[in-house]
Image (cartoon, rainbow, N blue to C red; front, side):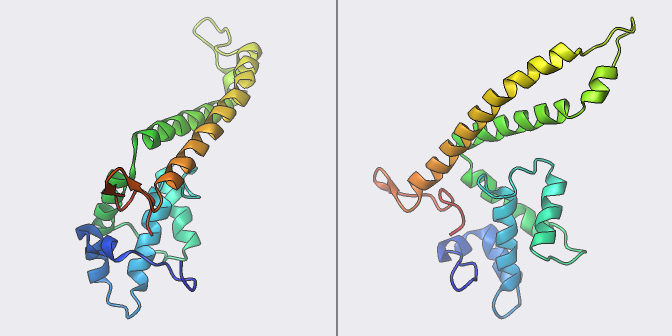
Amino acid sequence: MKNWVLQVDEQTWALEPFKKLLDRDKTKEKEKALKDMLVIYYYCDIVSDYDYITNLEDRIAEIKKDLMLPEKWVIDPVLQVAMDFYIERSTSIIGNLYKGASKSANDIANHLSKTEALLSERDDKDKPVYTINSITSALKQVPGIMRDLKAAEKEIIKEKNEVEGKKKGSRTMGMFEDGLE
């Protein structure tokens, strides 16, 4: 950000998917293309403040609301290609592991949030499928899951910070190894 306006590196605009976003924007200050780039970052980047929203429809709805995009706004094919391109070029092995761990933790949280239904679920012999002991046993594992997930999140942030503005060996950093800048 510079003077409260998103700045996108010129090299980024040279890449075909992003160039298409820029070229189709006929506004003088390229506000639409810059909003598209914000959508890409918030929707796709692993350290985005919206990454915790695992339901992608809910995530885009929240981003749309917060960026004050028009009610009829949708991800069109040009933007989708740019988003896919960003994800493909910015995801590391560590990032993939973190995403998988986050999804698993979220699935566990969703499962445990249905305690009443779990306790009332019966098998074909009318015996409880889940008991209070099985649920409390699972709850005892939650602090460890939280601790491990927080450590993984710190590793992702550390990885992003390590590569920001640095070189890997003798080659220059990849364009998306430090996010959209």
